[in-house]
Image (cartoon, rainbow, N blue to C red; front, side, top):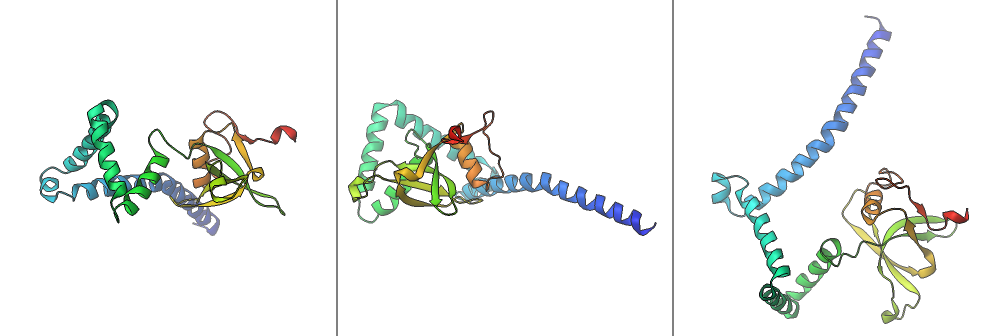
Length: 209
């Protein structure tokens, strides 16, 4: 086998190897995360997890759904949960853990989701730089910041982010893209593409170009 043939076979091997990683990597990470979550919940009751793996996890899912159903559909259930909520929010020490956690959870799920208003934010004037974020406070007058808004900017490849307070003139609504697509675009570092499932998106001022 001459050197040229060896190089061709080696390049083919490398190409196939990396293509395999592209298939196995996301699949393996997904399976690992799911397995880790199930195992962590199962370990809350080791005696049951040993005899019936996954049973604790399934029970926790069903119990959570049942609590949510009772809290939404029955007046008595709503009353009980409202009283528990009031007690936890007024208990010294505990309220500093419970209230922020509740706010963060309600921002992502439930009827009061707050990350549902994607906007373009100008973060630099020269050169002009825009970032994608989510409008979380439309009015900051209560803290003497009139005509200012609060915008959450998610980090790429992470579940974290940071909040900026900027003048209202520095934001523009994102057109043609859902909040879920905007979050996907931001978290993926932009590699998720410049369009939603079926409609290309543009900034609000593209019609002037």
